[in-house]
Amino acid sequence: MNIETQRKNIVHRILDVENTNLLSNIEKLLDEEVFTYKANGTPLTKNEYQEHISKILHASEDTENGYLTEDAKAKIKKK
Image (cartoon, rainbow, N blue to C red; front, side, top):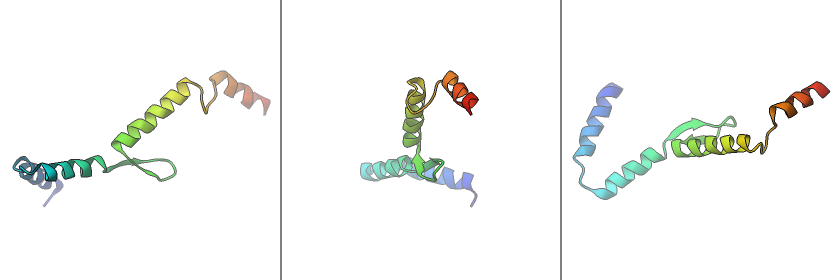
């Protein structure tokens, strides 16, 4: 069975499910699926990835844990 057929079969089965606990478990399983990995190999779910990117963007906007472009250029020129 190819992946497209498998997906369609699963969707049809889920649409017939009446058990809310089972649906919650399916949702939890999908939410915990590994979406990507950090540079150090740590797996991230989609929500964790979005939070990670958001923290990076905020830190770069606030110049926390980073440098302004001018500071980085000055530091390179000193070397």
